[in-house]
Amino acid sequence: MQLSQQVVVKYPLRIRVAACLFCALTAPLFVKSSVLIAIIVESVALCAAIWVLWYRVGISGAEISIRYFPFIAKHIPTQEVSEVIQQRALVLVTRKCRISLWGLPTSTGEAIIRLLPNRLQSNEDAEKSGVSRNMLGHRRWATCLGIAFVVSTASVVPFLYGNPLHEYWNSIGRYVLGATMCLFLAFIFEAGMAYISWSYFRSVDRINRRSSKRNGNAGQR
Image (cartoon, rainbow, N blue to C red; front, side, top):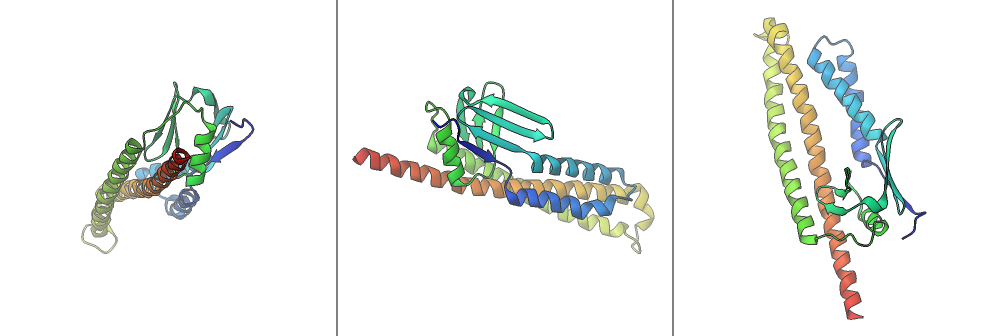
């Protein structure tokens, strides 16, 4: 094990870009808004974007350093990792916490496994089964939330200016709009998780096939 080698993991670039774009597109809409729910949704989205952009995990043979927010970090000795779980993410399990690593390329996942203690093993069938279940779960939630978002968006139209229910905008319409924004945020999150799970399922499958091939070649020798 090379103690000096380090693997740095961040959220996938597409997730970081999506978080920035979402905040940039929605912030102007609610700067002067009087809808409390919309302001809360935008504030939560901004905090989530900062977290996604700042999150960083550095893994070496000596320790695992996790940076959550500015000036908020945690350092864990690598030897404390007791289990590796490959489901919708590569999860490193210690006595005190679980460290989830999302959207890893195949080469990065293999490099991390090499840095961990040799005693750690993983069950390939259980890994693929867990990844598949999580991928289907996120896809199902994304579908349901997408349908709910479309229905909620259509429900806002009657309350807009020039439509029959515009007089009820302050009492009902603005809350329907706030609920629509919440559904949109939840849909984006679940759609992103579904895509990450699908990408990770492919990565796990490639890692397992390469591992099986290496083991087969070693057995023939």
